[in-house]
Length: 316
Image 1: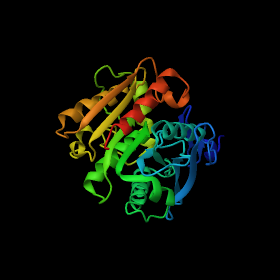
Image 2 (image 1 turned 45 degrees about the vertical axis):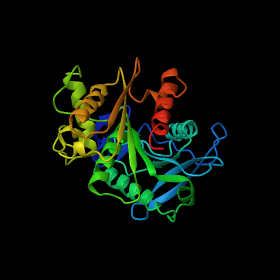
Image 3 (image 1 turned 90 degrees about the vertical axis):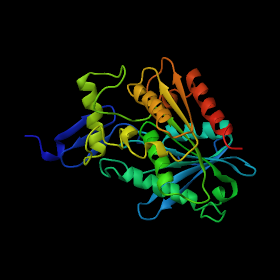
Image 4 (image 1 turned 120 degrees about the horizontal axis):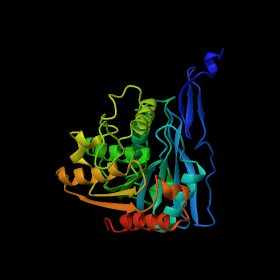
């Protein structure tokens, strides 16, 4: 007879497997690489603790020999809230490339993962990281790279998939809990992990597929009210139109199952009375987070350039 320790509670290939005894086996997003100087991009990076309480860190990126103040990007990694890390080869490579392309400072946030740390842990950690970044607004924060080079009057939040979900909610929180001396100019949401109980537009109606997405959401947030929970389906959030920034760029991929949610987000944001500028970029023939899996591709290069241009065409 199979022991309780080996009985599977949830099997979610190719990401992870959860056992009934609480053990989690992750198949993706477990590799890490150290920070340092990347000779290909001439971008430096280092890891800095932002929370003593949770022992979580950020990885900071800055161009080698950066001069003066540069726009600041706060980045939240994806992975369904359950896998990946700010220190993975995937995100380390992407942030090096983006920092070099855009000539910016970036802070890549690591947060506690579900299901060991169910939501709202990832949101709580991310907000702690934002507040830690904001502590540098007077130029006397704990990290000299940010004191010297980060322009806290020209800040962007970004992320992919679950990280894009986090970026949206952090922007909403910026309105609720104003931080003096920090100006959030825009957010960049790549293939955002939003969902809903009922299909929209030409979104899949396949019950098995929809149930799989619902299962992942419930794995990360056991206390959720379901797939219309405002954390995963923010459109009905009464604070939706109070997004605390001036500009939004949403990137979607033609073959991504989450594509319609990104399109819908843009449409509803325009109708919400928010009053800012929203742009939509679609990558034809591509799937979810293609730019991370194939960073050397033509569409990935176009997306990288679009994100860099979006940041550099913002607040002067």
